[in-house]
Structure formats: structure tokens, C-alpha cells
Length: 188
Image 1 (tube, rainbow, N blue to C red):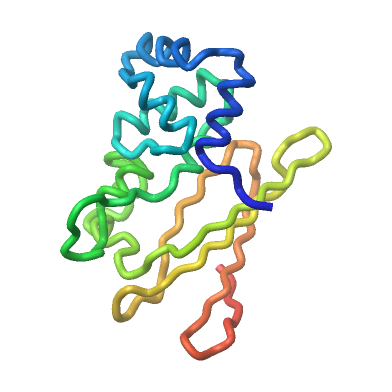
Image 2: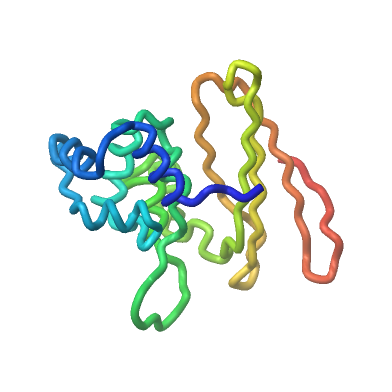
């Protein structure tokens, strides 16, 4: 089963809310967020996705307006896709800020090392599976992430996972592999 796209979830949430895109745009404007009707339509049809900081702020507001769980739309936004000429596929500190926010707790904890956050690895794919119990509460979350080293000495990944207050503990299993070897298992 594939993960639904940002466009599919956004379109379904708008339909379920009973609001027109114009009403959604009006509710965003009431919160001081100016997004054109065309942009909302493009997002809904999958023609484009939010990328800029003000668009991501709109996504957070859309989750509230459409009565969606926090992060449910934002988590579906694909990674930033640079346009135009690129001289190097180097590390983009801006992408860390777009995901975590300016001056996030992660940035404060890592200090100067934040500028090098995961610079020697590239995500090839991410798969998330969420299980619900009989009362429709999250009972488990599994995340699989396939990475490629893009520089010498890449042997770590800093991952940040935020859980609701209902989650008491988390178990994390990490499978590590080296080129030419069958992945072994290591726990953290």
C-alpha cells in the first residue's frame, strides 16, 4: 500500500470539510496568511507543493482549518527540489530550517554542528507505517529510511522524531550496512 500524496490528502480533507477553496483561502487570510486561490488549486491537483517558509506556515494553518492532526499534511511534502542551475548537490542548510524551523531546539542543542547536519548522507526513500488500535489511537509507528553516503566518512545520521504526549517510550532498531556486505544489525 502506497503512502498518499500531499495533494490527495489535501484534496480529501477539503472535500470532507465541506469548504470551498475560496473559503479555505479566506480562513487563511483571516490568520494573516496570504495564499492565492491558484496556489491552493495547484497544491490540491498535485501541480506544485508548498516549499517556501510562508507556504509551510500556511500548511500548518490548513491542518487546523481542516481539522487534521498536526504535521499530517507537512509530513507528506516531498523534499525541496531546487530549480535552475546547480553547481553542486551539496548540503542545503535551508532544508533543515524548513523542516525543523528557524532556531529550533535541534539547532540550539547541536550549535555549530547544525550547519553540518547530515551533510554527508542523502535520503533515497522514506517509508512510514502507522498502526491504529481499536479506538483509532496510534499503537505503533515504523519508519524505514534508505540512505546513500555522499562523502567520505559518512557513518551517522541524526534523526529527529517528535511524538505526542501519549507516547511513553520508543524502541528504535537500526540496520546498518557497508558496501559489499549484507546489512548487520545494531541497536540504539
